[in-house]
Image (cartoon, rainbow, N blue to C red; front, side, top):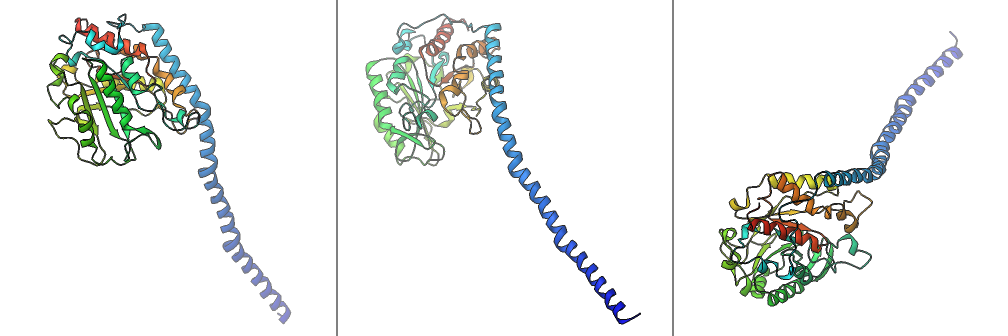
Length: 366
């Protein structure tokens, strides 16, 4: 073999080996990288985006389907229950008018408001619709008949809902005292808690006792078996729920989280919430066997992954079904377990429904 033939063979072999190296170390990794990148983009960008838009399309349909279930239940079974035709002639004094000598605490269906002090939260027309759960002031809610208040505070004693803030808690206390000064036999459950993600206001327990001392009902495990008359003249059951500070001691003037419980379901789907409320309530003991208050919230909550984030249009999906819920409680054997029923944007008919069932209990109809 000549020199040139050997040289040509060597060049060809080198070229072939180089091509293999290029394919192995450049082309294949590049193709592999491109494939992996495409998979990553599909998994982390395209699929979530498609899923997000699909959920935005499907969620209104799910909401509509669930509203139709509630509407159908309303038509087929109605919203009748013992006392459903009762209307207090004076909502401001509805407890007094039920006769405080006969009205025991375990017979009361307490009308409550959810996020009670949000009527001036945030900025009107901008951030307020995202957090406003009531349009009435605390005083106006009490006059309308609400008897359970849900107050959220942050470290500087301002009312808050998430990151949005409102007036100082002094406004709430002043409204409560004003109402108490105008009535004589109405008892209020005032729940005050540090909002999630915030720190406790300093020395807040002493503040509450200092402001409400003469009105405070002392913590008592036998309270629910007593009549309203036996509790008077004290009229405020104040439940303080700090996040970091020690909770109020047993037997003191303030009640702690052991005395007010609930099972909150975070959803914007009305039938899901309706069923969840019934399920959790059915698992409770009758009021006569309990030593704590149990709350059901007839509300649904805007979700971050949903295009509708204003409170009012979302909670309206369930808000008008309070009477249906009471009716279902009675028909399913939970009529003696319902104790506190809370709502967003409270109205008179909601109060009437709660007072009506209370009246029926006094009459021995439940």
